[in-house]
Length: 405
Image (cartoon, rainbow, N blue to C red; front, side):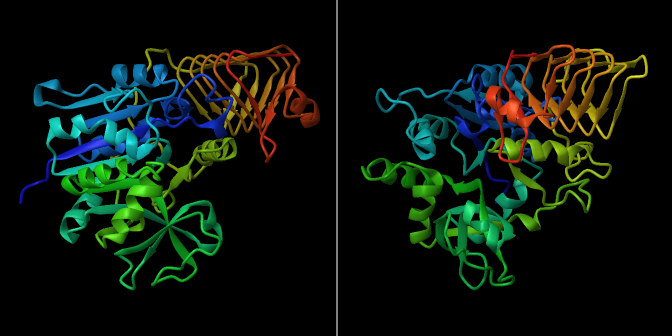
């Protein structure tokens, strides 16, 4: 058999309530990340780098900025039939939104019929990681599985926060799919670790279609991929796990190999940014052999004047740092930081303005936030809590267009 014909489906309908206020005005996969990217760029880069160029992105909540980003940035060569296309809920099965991730694919069955693939790759849209999906597809085909679930090894004592995969003694065939279990099972080769589901699946086309139709007819189902479809296929005995630790990405370093972060909370979003700015980054954006792709903004380079400086930081194009000090921070495009200001351990999204003599510590500022001269954030957390969202670990989060005085 030659290479299988693959259709990629990216589930990008997430509301992202735990990322409020960053998701007050945008879908979770459209949340900016790392100064130049949006979260969805990671999964799309992984699929495109693997040679999968026919991709449908299923969208739902507040999807305008996500749709615009996909259509303006992710343009494939149409000459060879390639595409990345956003697909909203089309109500093909009646007047309703997507009721769950499985229903999203069921409602979009026309995509599968039109493309007629051998394999359907279904990936989530809001994780930060590098992965070569082709290696997972190869294992899927060789094993004869109907579905293969990507699993990442996590310490057993942490696994209760995830959907957990239990396997037979070979460590390959899935025998149970448990949602946030109190006592997670160990692995055959490592009793102190457990496979957590990464939310990435590879299906044989016919098996997926049959499972979706069975699920749609089940009135007790919540129509969720992890909650309903995978357990159903586990019962059939044809579900296998793919060990993410076996994935080899060109250009990976020992330090960032196997890196995967679910940035579903503000603290994990903040921590993932701090992973980028260390001297020896835990996640390396500078791997040109497996690039994370996005739209390159038409901006001049970042500029540092009057002794302005940034250390252990990433500064995006168009930013101007004037006579001020930035440490361990990620600075987005077109940010202005004025004389005498101090920005420390913070994430500033595009267009933020930091006034003279102000202090910003351990904060996330959404687009176009204005911090007035002499104002402070992250200095008096009690005061900040009265006005802004403060995370459990003490990160101050200020929503879009807000003014801080």
